[in-house]
Image (cartoon, rainbow, N blue to C red; front, side, top):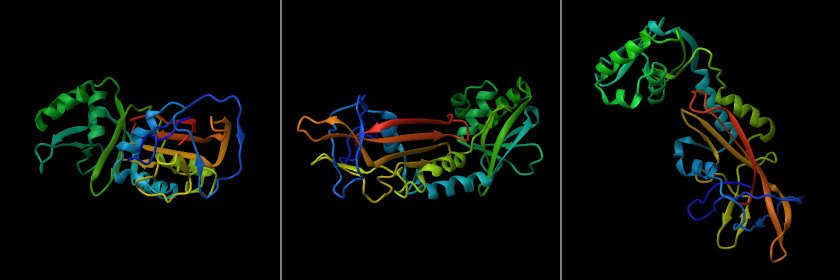
Length: 281
């Protein structure tokens, strides 16, 4: 069993346990379920997402999330270019910022913090050190690395976002899965993620009563649907259909809820993945 961590005093660290007998009960009552939050094991991966995501990364439905990442993908394009054909220069408007000139592109391309690190890694240069150098000097080092790069080609992911930005640069054989493709797949079983199917954003735990209530309004504070310019993370549960795994010491049912979380990065910061678990609260 796993789940989100403690959230501003309203939730409890997630737990996981092994069960030998399970029984699926009827759908939830409006008052929610009594749960034992003292059992199981915390899964920090899920709770850390909730703690670390800013409001701009949080979405209230899978539809909203999908629209955002799909619009981003529609403005992006991928192509393979010759490494030695990339020109690195200091920005004319900001001499402390590097710009790239790519083949067949007539305007400078601005590397993001992430793609700059990828570019440095590809040519064997320490990104942290380069960021401390004046832009012109860092550009000379990058230019030399590109001209002597063993792999003759790189794959770029560029986006028009008011200006042309380089979102990612990888080896030519990199297989990219776009974030909206993951959301498309999740929506086939989870719909909007708000309760129109079995799979939805989790509810909340009342610490004073140990009652887990799956029927709460989804807000920026409670959502578990996240996307940034670097990655995507989705956490959903089937908490309207509890599973009984034995009894609590007081004789009440010991309840769990099925759940899963999935993640991806179309810019290469992590690989596509999915994990299932049992949620207590």
